[in-house]
Length: 421
Ligand code: PLP
Image (cartoon, rainbow, N blue to C red; front, side):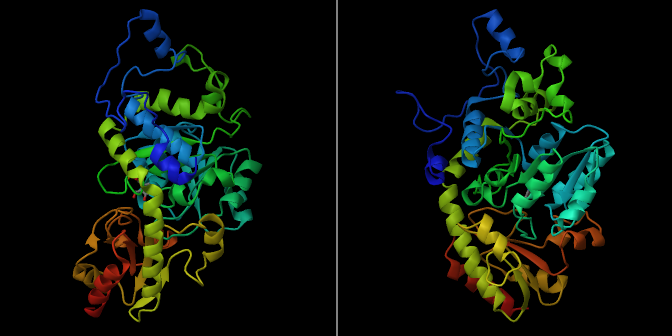
C-alpha cells in the first residue's frame, strides 16, 4: 500500500459482519476456556491478548498501522512520547550503559536522557547536531548502547543526516534510534535510510487534533542484536523461564522485550480510547502533512521578508542551511513547524504572542490549529542558559506550529500582531 492508502486502511481489516470502523475494545481482560491456553500466553509461547496492560485489540490495530507506515516489523504503543523514549532506551540499557545523542532534542527528551536517566546510571553524551563524523565517533565508548537523534529537531528544525548517523552507528555495532515525531512517516521513513528503531510522540501529528497523549516505538526488525552487546535480548530471561528473546522471537526480539518486560512491569499503557482517536487522526495523516507543509512553507517565506523578523528557520526554505538535507530526506514537504527570531528579545516575543488572535498560545505542535510558543520560557525552561544555547534555543526564538487553516488568514493574523510590536 502507498502511504496515503496505508494511513486509511493498514492495521484493521474487518471480517464480514464486523464493524467497518476500528472498534474500541474497552476491556481490561480476555476470556479463555482452556487452562493451558492461558498458561501458554503467560510463557509467551502463544500469541493473544491476556490483559490490557500488555496488549489490547484497539491498541494493537494502531500499532500495526504505525509499523506499516514506518516500514517496520512491529510496534509497541505506550501512554506518551516520553514513555516511548524511556521504554525504547530501557529495553537495551541498564545502569553503567551509555548513549550518544545529538543535542538538538525536544526539551523533555533532553532532561530524560541527560538528567533523569543519569540518576539511574545511564549516561548520555550530547554532541552538537552538526558534529563531524570524527566527533561522533570519539563520543562512542565501549559501554555505548545506542545513538539517538530526531529526524527534524524540535524546535530547531535541523534535518538529521540519517544515512551518516546510521553508518557510524553500524560501524560500531550500535543501533540508531530516531524520534520521527515532527517529520512523521508521511514525510520521512527513517528505516529506509538505515535507522533501526523509531519513536513517536503520537500526541502530535499522528493524533493531529490535540485530543490524546500517546507514544509508539517501532522496530525495523533489521538490527542484529546478537553480537554480545545486548545480553537483555540474547541471554536467558529468568522471569520467562530462561527464554532468550532473540532465539524465541528472531527479528521481533526488541519489540517483544519492550512489551513483555517493560509494559508489563511499568504499566505505561495507551488506553483503547486514545488509540481509537490516534488511529482516527492517522487516517488523514498524509493529507494533513501535505497541507501543513504547504502552509508552513508559505508562512516561512512571508516571515523571511518581514523587517521585524531577524531570521527564519524552515528546512526547505531557499537558502536554508538545511535545504540540501531537506531535499534528500523530506522531498514531499518539511512538516508544519517554523521557528523564527523576533528582532529584539523576550519582550518582543511576548508582545507578538499576546497580540495574536487566530494562532493560540499552546504548548503543542502538530494540531490542525495554528499554535505559537516561546520555548526558552516554557518547554526548555528547565535547561540552563548555556544548555539552551547549545540546544539552539535563543531568547528571541519563537516556534510556530502551522495548522491547516487558510494560509492567508494565518499571515493576516501574524501581520496585525507584528504591527503592534
Ligand atoms: N519527542 C518530540 C519530538 C516531542 O516534540 C515531544 C513532545 O513535544 C515528545 C517527544 C514527548 O511527547 P509526549 O508529550 O507525547 O510525551
